[in-house]
Amino acid sequence: MEYLKEEKIISKKILFTGLDDAGKTSIILALQREFSKVANIQPTRGAQRRIFQFLGKEISEWDLGGQTTYRISYLKNPDKFFEGTEIAIYVVDIQNRERLAESLSYLNDVIVEFKKLQINPPINIFFHKYDPTLIKATKDELETLILNLKKKINNIINYNKLYFFETSVYSLPSIMNAMSEILLELYPKSRLLKKTIEEFAIKLNCQGIVVIDKNSLIIGSFFKDHETGEILTRSMPYFLTLNDSFQLEGVSQKNQDQMVVHRFGKYFLFKEILLKESGVPYYILIVKGDNPWDLYFSSKDFRAFIQMLRDIIYK
Ligand SMILES: Nc1nc2c(ncn2[C@@H]2O[C@H](COP(=O)(O)OP(=O)(O)OP(=O)(O)O)[C@@H](O)[C@H]2O)c(=O)[nH]1
Ligand SMILES: [Mg+2]
Image (cartoon, rainbow, N blue to C red):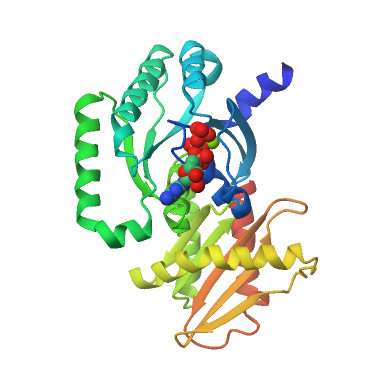
């Protein structure tokens, strides 16, 4: 009880809700790069909670299993399940057209409970299963569907903080970008992080930088242009996965280890960075078009940059 009380004060509650089979748990697992679990996913039983760190603060993540019996119990006990929500993520399976109306109706039920509890968290609606293959086959149809859904939601639901995203577990950047944007909103210091990263990139003539944490959440980035941003965000999950696989194989990662990929005449440099002894690792991916790159991560400027990140995140 004491623990719960304390947790309530120090951690921020983020709530995943929506119908069963919408893809909530898959999104959470994909961010953790638990792909074998994503492939064998089972319906979530009741409320599953996990605590994780984001920018040095605790986030308490609630994944509410969406089967009817559970949904009824959440609506009956809103103070147990919805109370204290600081961010809500409402997942809609856009491929299941037959259940769209049911999904919007439950969204409305959740909002009614929020209002009764007198809480007003941002509700981020994920139009999920917006798969790359589907976009290829039926782009116009999909766009019309999303547009109509947004209109409908805005018409039938009276809530001042609704935000929309299109996501798919088959496009990791879609989830990474959405979740990062949503979580960074919680941290006023995220603007300072962005500025620091930008200044460092310009000073060292980098074309792009992404700083990301263990949960695939982007904590800041800078891109010279849109194309560089696309390449970096698209390749980041693979660098992370490759890095995971080295660790799984028991290959110890020494501090000076880095991965370098040469492509399009550019150097992509990836490195794990520890901002705190025994703390969670962060990762940095840099793209530089020219030399010198070999001693890059041991440069004085790089060390100063890391120190600045450390100061912003932990002080
Ligand atoms: N095509 C496609 N399928 C997905 C996507 N995300 C999840 N799925 C599939 O959707 C099904 C349900 O996924 P879950 O993550 O278990 O859904 P959930 O919302 O957690 O369901 P409950 O726990 O019952 O509330 C699984 O078969 C997933 O493989 C996606 O982006 N695209
Ligand atoms: Mg689930």
